[in-house]
Image (tube, rainbow, N blue to C red; front, side):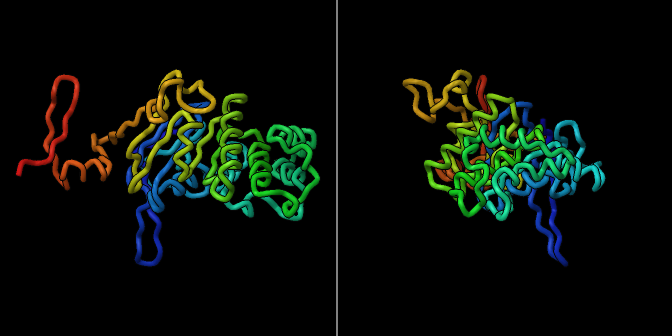
Amino acid sequence: MIVCENLVKIFKAADLEVVALQGLDLKVENGELMGIIGNSGSGKSTLLNMLGGLDRPSAGKLFVAGSDLFRLTNAELVKYRLETVGFVWQNNARNLIPYLTAQQNVELPMLLRGKRKRERAKELLDLVGLSHRKNNRLSELSGGEQQRVAIAIALANEPKLLLADEPTGSVDTRTAAMILDLFQELNRSIGLTVVIVTHDLELARKVDRVVAIRDGKTSSEIVRRKGAADEQDGPLEGESEEGAHDECAVLDQAGRLQIPEEYLQAIGAERKLRIELEEDRIILFPPRR
């Protein structure tokens, strides 16, 4: 579904340049449910905006659902945003028009394609558990209900890829769990590819893979072990939460490795490490004093 190779994004303002992505590599399979985590300024929201066709990359390669986003014209990008991707934002003001009802909000993307389908809108609201609120406006819905309407809107034009930027950031813990359960159900029931940007580390219990971004590059991945992926509510019986996953550092195309800062501090290393090959493993040591 997604192929990023050596992806670079540079923002320019007057004489100032900010490099948001510095050669990021990422692949996402069709039907995968994955999360992207990282500190503020790491580049994760920049990546999401480029996957959604809202920003153009500066260099590298970016393919989504077979489309080369470097080569799309402005008109083709509009069509791409309307038909290929669906968005769910943290800020509900970006998702919903307050003076429309829930059903009218869901119908709006269909109108933009010239295909208004009231029955389809009702089906989507039923899918997110809000068919009984179809005639309510924004002010009459809770934060969690608004976010579920936003998910129905994102699905209105049957996208191949659903992108969610901090979708649980403005709701309480219980509602956040309900929203993540809904993403999981959509992924499993209709095979929708879902990419979620979040600060919520509990996301690892709900997705197949979590990719961490640091300084504009992928630094590590947390991958649910085979068998644990079938568990709805967390790790397998007798396993800790950590035991249900493997955490892997990621090598870029040049063979470079990002090592977590806390690991380096633990062995007293700074900018240099000794490397030794021992049978089937590579061992890193601090330099000799």
